[in-house]
Length: 204
Image (cartoon, rainbow, N blue to C red; front, side, top):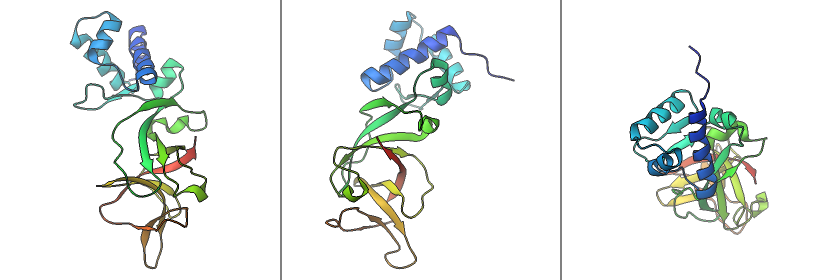
């Protein structure tokens, strides 16, 4: 059975979510949506969400009132550029505070919008990657993936925080490590506590 086309009301909800992401940096609350749609029932809104999710226009996080994400099909229904979350700052030096909060959402260019469901934008702090043309304050687009090869520039996370480095895997000690692209900084040995959460796509 084919999915039904998006209705005018469903598209209106999508547009409100999209605009709120751009202007406020997060999806609207139930109260905000009901006010803008001029409806009083939570259930009416939940029914619309359920249909949008079932037809792959959005994805919702359980237990999060604002955990709404527009999917590629939703962006196409709006004829709008896909958005990627700017998730704060991460270190191009040692480890700093872990990425948790989305600061804003930014439109993606045509060359990367095909992976819009799996990307995030990170602002760089520090100068340990300057030889890879990654400077303090740069915005880096990362693809969230579990597949990496030696030489990839990655976003790594530990219990202490996050950092941007080049991932190296080799057949001699040290077997796995994170390599800075600045000779003033030492390598960081890869441990079981570390997790690579993204691979660099491009500098924005």
